[in-house]
Length: 83
Image: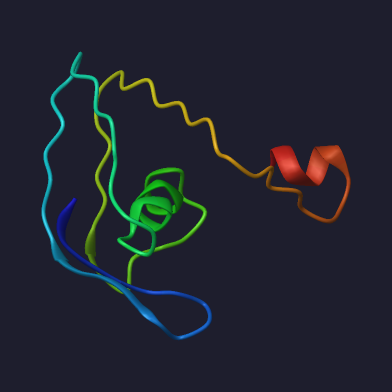
C-alpha cells in the first residue's frame, strides 16, 4: 500500500495516507476496533474496491487469502463471477 486513500461507495472516508509493505513470506494479522478500516483494507487487497488515491501493488508469487466474517455474494452466473 502506497499513500492509499479510500472513499467508500457510500462516500465515506475510510482510509487516509496509508502506507504498508508486506514482504514475501511474511504473515500479517489485521486487528483493531470497529470502524478502523480493517475490512476496507481487505477489500482493497482483494481488489473488490479500488483506492481513491495511491497504489495497492502485489508483485511476485504472493499468495493472498481472506476469511471474511460475512459471505460476499454477487449477482450473475458463476462464470461471470469468475471473470
